[in-house]
Amino acid sequence: MRLRDKVAIVTGGGRGIGRAICERLASEGAVSVVADLNEGDAERTAASIETAGGRAFGLPLDVTKQAEIDGLVETVVARAGRIDVLVNNAGVFDLSPLLEQGRDSWDRIHDVNVKGLFFMLQAAARQMAAQGEGGRIINLASQAGRRGEALVANYCASKAAVISITQSAALALTENNITVNAIAPGIIETPMWSVVDGLFAKSQNLPSGEPKRRAVEAIPAGRIGEPEDVAAAIAFLASNDAAYITAQTLNVDGGNVMS
Ligand SMILES: NC(=O)c1ccc[n+]([C@@H]2O[C@H](COP(=O)([O-])OP(=O)(O)OC[C@H]3O[C@@H](n4cnc5c(N)ncnc54)[C@H](O)[C@@H]3O)[C@@H](O)[C@H]2O)c1
Image 1 (cartoon, rainbow, N blue to C red):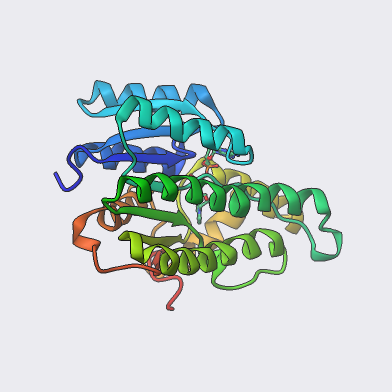
Image 2: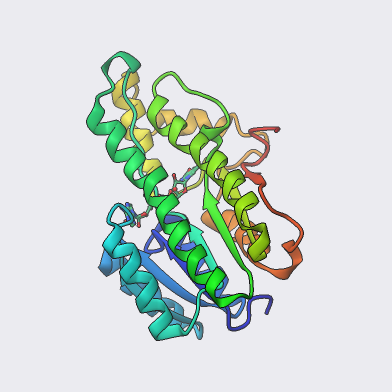
C-alpha cells in the first residue's frame, strides 16, 4: 500500500484514463476524489471503487470555472482533511485543417487543457504548501505535445504547454517539497479515442475505425495502450518511490516516442 491514507484528487476521473487512475490510487490505499464535469460518471466511479473495498467520493467539477476549482478544494479539505496528490487528467480533443481552425476550438481546448490544468494545479499547490508536508502533482500531457501534427495544431500546442507548465511548476514548488511531473500517453483505449478516430475518419475520408487501426499498427509494442498502463505510472509518480523525480514528462506509449 504505497499510498495509504493519501488524499488524491483526479480531474476528469469519471471515465477513461481518469477512472483507471482513481481505481489504481484507491487500490494502493488512497482516498480517490473523483472530480468530473459529468457528475453521474464521478458518482458511478466512486461507488464502484467503494464496492470493491476502496475509499472514494465523487464531486462535480468544471476546470474552466475558478469558483468550482476553489469550491472543490474547500470541499475536499472539509471532507477528507487534506490534499496530498493532484492528477490533472481532464482534457478535451479537437482537430481540423490548419487553415480552417477557428478561435472557438482554440478557446475550448486551451480553457480546459491549459488554463483549467494550471489553475487547478495552483489551487491544489496552495493547499499542499499550507499543509507543509509536500505533495505530488501529475499532469496529463500527450505524445501530441512532443511533436506537431498537421490537423491537430490546437491540441498539440495545448499538450506542449502542459509539458512546459510541468517544468515551471516543478521549479517553483521544490521549496515546498511538492514534485510536479507529467505523463505523455500514446494511444490509449478510451472514449476519447472514439472521438479522435471519428474526426480523423471524417477529415481524411476513411471508414470509421481505420485511423485507429493504422495508429495502433504503428506502435512498436504491438498493441494499444490501456488506461491501466497510464494509471500504473501515475501510482509510481504519486508514491515515495518517486520522491527524487520532478519536472519530468514520462512517455507511456509502447515506444512511440523516444525523448
Ligand atoms: N486516450 C488517449 O489516447 C490519450 C492520449 C494522450 C493523452 N490523453 C490525455 O489523457 C487525459 C484523459 O483522456 P481520456 O482518453 O481518458 O479522455 P476521455 O474523454 O475519455 O475522458 C475525459 C474526462 O474528462 C472530463 N472533462 C472534460 N472536460 C472537463 C472539464 N472542463 N472539467 C472537468 N472534467 C472534464 C470528461 O467528462 C471525461 O470524464 C486527457 O487529458 C487526454 O488529453 C489521452
